[in-house]
Amino acid sequence: MTKTPGVVVEKLKQHESLRVVRRDGDDLILTTAERAERQEEVVDTIARTYSALMKTDEGARAVLLAMPEIFPWVRHLNDAEVREFLLELVGAVRDAAELDVYGKVPGVVAGWRATARIKADPEEYAEALRPLDGTDFGPVTTPEAAT
Image (cartoon, rainbow, N blue to C red; front, side, top):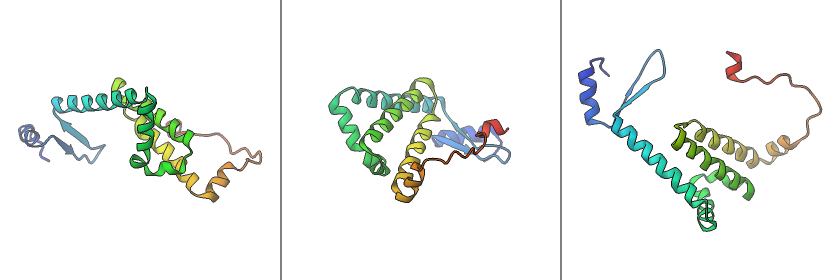
């Protein structure tokens, strides 16, 4: 991509968004305010739709029945876990729409997918359920705490 603003604007008129590849940091996505607002509207509509569906038995049942099509790995979760995943996912999508907090959605999906992955392997699942022998594995650190 060029560093000339006029050329960038002309390219943006031809495409809905442009990726700016940076050597010294995260890539950037340039888009128009109109497109960003449309995306926010879409997320809001999806969030409201799922929330409304979850308020009725028929709607919740329909969404639950669709879960294996959306996330095939849920077949390794029991019914209560699928419901819990769905409620957590709907809450995260609502947060994305209402609070502009998008990071929770991938985290919810990744967490439940990891649970399904462990449960899919009987040996790994049995090991995960094995009681600890009292060994202290030391303090738990997070990437934020390490910096």
